Image (cartoon, rainbow, N blue to C red; front, side, top):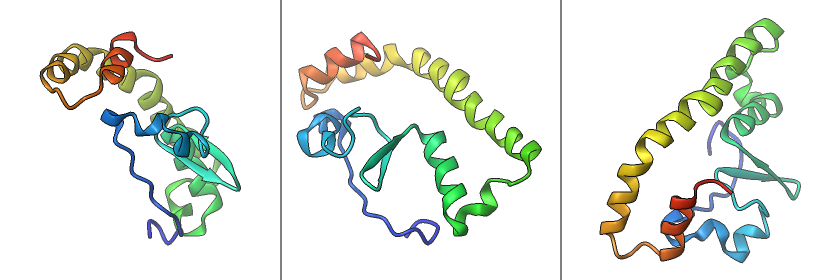
Amino acid sequence: MAGKVEHEDKFVRLGNLDHKKPEILALNPNGQVPFITVDGQPIIESAVILRYLCITEKSLARFYSEDPSMAAKIDEVLDFNGTVFRPNIVAWLKPYVIKLLMRKTEFSPDLLEMIKQGPA
């Protein structure tokens, strides 16, 4: 159990496009990872998931402040990661990842094409 929160893990292999398979799309029509499903509704984006769990689960409350000023500081870091750091590091790494994937025959052609095209 993570943070004393009961959950069921579903591991997906991105190289096999598991996140686009019907059983995952039934849980999360966006086909994005990571995601959690709460009461049948998917919650996507890692920062949103972290905030949601910290607000709703007492065992995780210590990681997100009820004080608006402190919560804003935490949000700054989470949002910086999602809007500045991650997109830039992905853009920088993308050519290298594509080269590596091109050498691997076990990756599906659909995945390689999706990576070349970028986010939908």
